[in-house]
Length: 277
Image 1: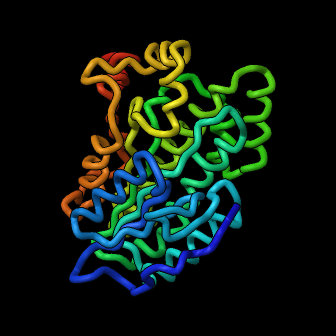
Image 2: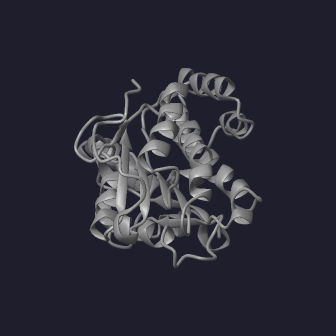
């Protein structure tokens, strides 16, 4: 359910030259770790999430058009008309069409909707959080509908996948579509031409509230381990992902754009081999 901006600091811009960064999914998991990392670096963070809790300045459901519009309006207000970094981290992992609405259309709307604020920012950077699941089997109809910006067709294709017992394809397809959208958009005049690097990170299995039920069940954990083999250090914690996000959204990143950076303990290399790059 879409909400409203909470009554927190509304001072435009950053303090003492700090960057103004917006992070969706800031209530938990990777989003919260990123928000805390950026705050610890002295930046001003505007947190957004469907939940109204500590660290959340904008309560909005990115699975809905109203929530996406609310995010853009509140971000403009709280950021004083500009943003220096946007991290689209909000996501869900259920075998339901809502996964496509949030993971694909919600993330794309976040990036596209806030791009004008980035264009007004200082050394602007943008990043989306996808998943190594983007290299798994997908449903071409879902991916094609997302890339055609046809949300209802994507939802219908997702519902059909669930109905025929292929629910896992919905999550992978939402993440694949997000990756492909970023790859397309990053090199356009609106992004590269405007001096805004736009990238994606693809984590492996990260210990978050989203993954906890899967990891606590021996059967689903075995399936996850087979699908996302992580020979380097195994599962990650959100705090181990946050530094990569920090780097890719920092002013020092001047030329990395349109890239999918895997932070997956080697899973992509195992799954796709030496030709998968």
